[in-house]
Image 1 (cartoon, rainbow, N blue to C red):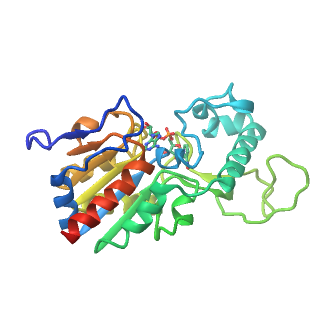
Image 2 (tube, helix red, strand yellow):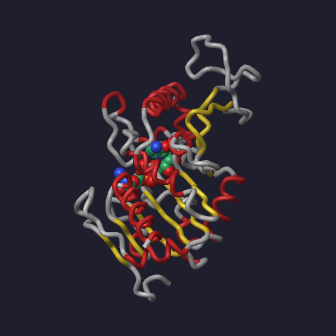
Image 3 (cartoon, protein in one colour):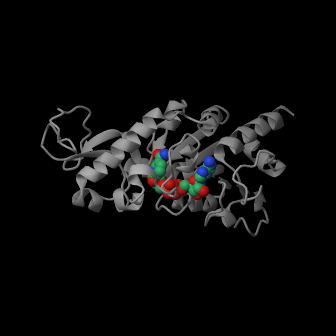
Length: 269
Ligand code: NAD
């Protein structure tokens, strides 16, 4: 147990969102530099600095009266498919206009520094791939893909007959985004890959995730149980903070570039 090893280190102040003067603990750098297999799990917080709101941020403008938890469910789609499609259409446009931030870029650089590297994301925005991360394991799907709500097949083109949502050209079923909604099962191959990557790594990062959305949140515990060093990066404490070996309090776009700089300096020393 990490607590018994007396290694829990919280660096930075959770009262300050960004902490540019953070010092990365030497113990963390030693362990990271020695790691052969690194696995990273990211959540919505990683894209926050690209202007993509997390589900915990209050919605603004047109969508202020709705909570994402009420829109991102199969029941919401059954009740009001038009509303759900339009909300995702708005998010799709927002994501298309967003750019990868310093956190995405640092993670794309990190993949080249280790023998084995896996990036698991709960994000559906494709920003990791746009930052040139390879083989990203997307456990909640991708907002840029569309599927038939009846058959589950991916649909890449359809006739615009004015229907909202549009209809599947093959069966006439309603089209929906290819994302995993609350209350829906996770995609099996991706979950299997994510579990293997979490249980077989020697270093695990949990970045920008509130650690309350299961089963993604179970990956941290699996990594811990398997003996990995676990580091959390988040400006706010989460239910997992006390179990992590190291908790770096700050925005991912600030902390990750600092960590990369410190790691390279440590390796060169
Ligand atoms: P979440 O549960 O992963 O919570 C967001 C976390 O990010 C919070 O703990 C918050 O403190 C932290 N955070 C905020 N700004 C940060 C920063 N700059 N750096 C690091 N951490 C930061 O995510 P959620 O918003 O509750 O979403 C739940 C699910 O909904 C996701 O897992 C995903 O499937 C979907 N979602 C995806 C996106 C996206 O693709 N960008 C955005 C919103 C929601």
